[in-house]
Length: 65
Image (tube, rainbow, N blue to C red):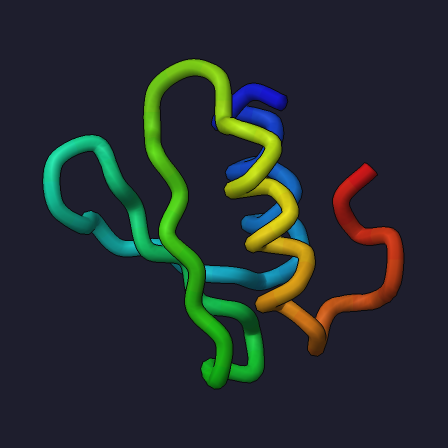
């Protein structure tokens, strides 16, 4: 999955982002309790996608399809 697609979905759901180190961006869910790091340009690995889904439990089920 491309970073642009993930970022668009997260923004639409009310998540916020800030810069991390290097190519990383830290995303925070709308409730503010969950955080996940995503690598920026290009393709996001399946492991990071699974990490996002497991960490952002406050978002509705199936939010990242």
